Image (cartoon, rainbow, N blue to C red; front, side, top):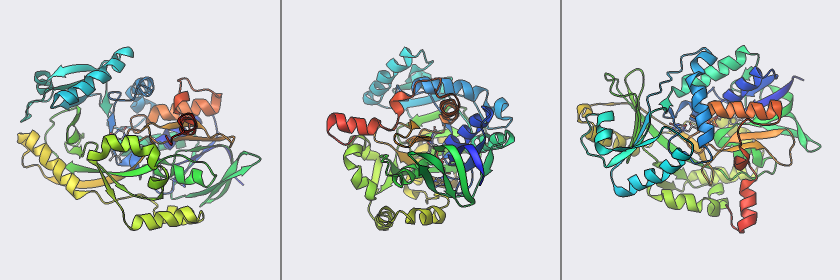
Amino acid sequence: MPSYDVAVIGGGIAGCASAYYLAKAGLSVVLFEKGDIAGEQSGRNWGFVRQQGRDPLEIPLMMACNRLWQGLEAELQADIEWRQGGILYLAGDEAGMAKYEAWLEHAKAYRLDTRKVTGAEAAALLPGMARDWLGGLYTPSDGQADPLKTTRAFAAAAARLGAVVHTRSVVDALETAGGRVAGLRTEPGEMRAKTVLLAAGAWSARLLRTLGIDLPQLRVRSSVLGTAAVPEKTGLGVWCPGFGLRQRRDGSFTIGGGSRVDHQIGVDTLRHFAAFWPAFKTSKNHTSLALGRHFLDDLRVHLDGAHLGRQLRRERVLDPAPNRTTARRCLRAFRATFPEFRDIEMATAWAGIIEVTPDELPVFGPVPGIEGLLVATGFSGHGFGMGPITGKLMAELIAEGKPSLDIGDLRLPRFAERRAATGRAV
Ligand SMILES: Cc1cc2nc3c(=O)[nH]c(=O)nc-3n(C[C@H](O)[C@H](O)[C@H](O)COP(=O)(O)OP(=O)(O)OC[C@H]3O[C@@H](n4cnc5c(N)ncnc54)[C@H](O)[C@@H]3O)c2cc1C
């Protein structure tokens, strides 16, 4: 039976970057991806690589990550369309500006190059907008990259260093013996591994549940559109009320619906209702809820653990239809904001399933009770930019026993600890 130092579950950016840095550290690594590399979130996102607007816990991680991004094309020997063009958030009213100003205090504490801009400065950074903004927040050192190319580049670089990458290969189950990881049951066969890193995105909670481990994680759908190509307008990643945009190297715009998402009510929605309630309250104006057939399918998976393997094969790549209403609304808002693009067409639209945690922060590190099992998941809609540092920190944790940055507050037991401390599900 093949045997490895580390088995990585998931060929998204978290898994592929981890496989790369683990192989670079000299460990024998195998990675399993049930579909294609970057087939789910990591190949469907906007491509923003931002330090701006992050939770304070993530700022030092993203500042270190930003330095990695700057050398990533050389490191991976690949064109990933990295561009350090800055990120600009725009606000139309006092409440929006107040939020940005409050966040600026965190940026100052970390000496990040974020600054407040006036409406006139925003217009100078991004000329040709039809509406006047009250102002915004601007981080020149932020950037963008092509999601698919970046994730594939990590997988290819890992393979060049000897990592074995299995695609179209479902991991059905983790085997444990005596309280520690023993190996994996996978589509290509059984494997032995001393350490398993679970980086399975929207599937992580389901896999953990088969081991009796609870990770509060819900899924939301986020829809995006791509326009026809036009001459270069901006190298900024822009976020304004209603939509966000970046212009790709081929001249097309990727436009997303801001924080507008759809959630299909499932068994976990009910199980984790109390934990997610505070986050839902703040996002309810841009979260659509639906109750349908999905609930029954989900119930079946919950009641029958063996059903998960079948579901993983059936839903080999989570490829939801985009919300066309959201996409059309974004296009209208974009055209109205930039009159020079009033006739621009939607060339394509797609959606991705994002996994969110109650505090909208990732989960890093060991899984208590199962020695040798670690997680890197729960990125809550902003894990692409964090991909490189995720991989580096996971590799340090596994190879050296200690990461170079503090990720203690992002560990899995935080949810259970908060629940115990407050008596409430958090
Ligand atoms: C529309 C959209 C826009 C976004 N915009 C941004 C952005 O601009 N910037 C940013 O930083 N983030 C953004 N994100 C979030 C970002 O894409 C994710 O946080 C990040 O890609 C998560 O990476 P991951 O590797 O954890 O998960 P994924 O990319 O989802 O990868 C997990 C992989 O695990 C595989 N897998 C699961 N279970 C198994 C199994 N049992 N066996 C084998 N394989 C398995 C899946 O097939 C999947 O490919 C966006 C997301 C979406 C959907």
